[in-house]
Image 1 (cartoon, rainbow, N blue to C red):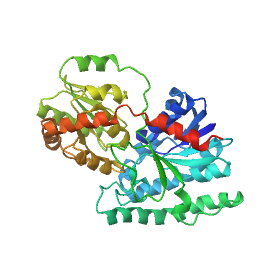
Image 2: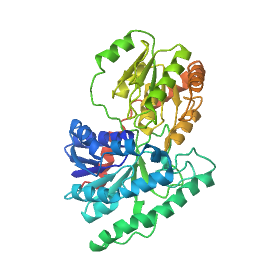
Image 3: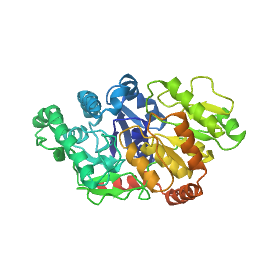
Image 4: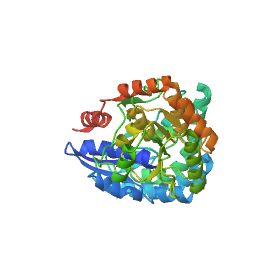
Length: 403
């Protein structure tokens, strides 16, 4: 089959699609990723084709960092990108047999239908469809009472549908497709891939869709850890890992200084991941090391604890590493993941993303000194180990869509 994987978002939104693409490509399928321009190199490294679906998401995040965590401003930014996303995916999907839509790819069903391709969703978080379990991923708030969670989905969807319809319906009419009148017309499909391990969340019982659940989709690029990082890891006790992935920081130097202060209060060593915010650019003490992108699967198991933004990808990787976690959710689905980590017992508390040094130091001391957290982390690692979610998803795609 010729398969196009499309997604809009930060690193954690795209890496699972790359993992699925690698699994499908290994079976002989022709696979291309259609995403923001900054993911071209990652697609090539994974052995996949690439088609741009618009501007670099990393540049958008850097230019509009404050809008990222304001739902109204974020929606305005996202909607402004819909025309370029549609143009990119329409071109990429020509001749495709299947389009797999990842996070934010609202143009996916229309682009697939125009090109005569099948379509299915790849869902990376339970809050992607209306449910009483968690809040809408776009709002960036922790789960509340079931009726509030359901309302958090209904209101944004009611506002979003007519705006998207104005862009998509003229194209749909030209190709004899039914117009979009409600959000349900835009997103609901009979079958959905749910790439969240059941050890974290089972399929929400109140989803109005049929979902095939797999384990998490892991991407292992095979790259060894840098020599400098290996030397640091070998030189002393297991360090604390601090990194917030693709999340921006208004003042990276100040954020780094707070992290340094907090770690020094604990007497621990630490690794600081630069991420998209560029943390750790200033001189660090000898017992701290700044690093660039590395394979989580290789570094996190060698750490004493992981302080992270609770994005889906980092949450999964830290959980598979079997170490205690201190989640610092910034927005989107992160508060829900952070709360779930506490419910599973692998985290003791969450911190606001504008944390100070005493708060981070206290959270680390409490978490690292809690034997129950260590035991829960080891138990969760055992439940996650050995499950190949991407291969399972590829099996399902072949059985469902290959004629």
